[in-house]
Length: 410
Image (cartoon, rainbow, N blue to C red):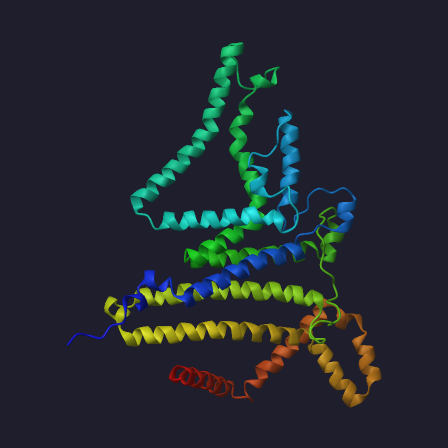
């Protein structure tokens, strides 16, 4: 008697799994979170301070690529002194002639293109990859050396034998041609400040690289940490001329969503949620596919294994949306926990004392919010000994399963 099997389109083989809507949904969700994270971080950490701009400053170490490339353009153009554009990479590809989101469109498209080429490269055999690496290295070497040799040889034919540097005429000095790859590296550095984590994140999502996902998240956290350090009041007073726009020390009044959260807190919360959503969705895809790959080949067509895998990944899609929403709501509540405590005190003890405490500067500053958020987390952690959360979550999952069963029967 032949063992029961599922249709070929529903097996747990890797090519089939990569076409499943759940996998594509998680990958698309991670990609959308990554792109939105780029836009949001550019808005929050991209501008230079108003004083720096009004003083004529050209570049500050902000999360924005066009300002640094424009500065490099002017510096290279002054060194060349030949009336040509100072940048070697076309300005259209860099997006420096545009402003806002339009300056990020072409570099984003290049990131998608490079990701596709990298995935194709990874799927080739070892011989092809070896020759591709050798060909790329040979092309870079030829691009750096051959124009220098050609220019020097043409100059020798015109002026006679001479060294390619230290000559009285500009068209007899050719040593700077050898430094074109270094200039390309400088241009890619300014471009990579913003788009290196985007490229790594796309490779991690669609190339199934857990290391690339971790690197992208680490890069974002490093940028946030460096910005917070360089805009700290003590640092800005000791080192002048940085030009970064510091975040306000006070988180502000909660005026959004019925007094739940302040505008500044919402911006920072969006960045945190997008990082979490990007990393969670990307690693979920890799984890599920790794599990399927490790299964015995016979089990990949077994209906029971296929059913269990489908249930697990459907539950993960549902939990991803629900848990991220719960985390966002809980964080917003934690940031406003001080106001909640003051309202309770006002009801129990009168409003005069609570009003004085609410107006205190320490409570309004960022570390005051951190302390109140910590108290909220302690309260929530203590509730695990009072509220049977596992029982509650079990009832919720049982209700969802019964709804699915009723729909399938209908």
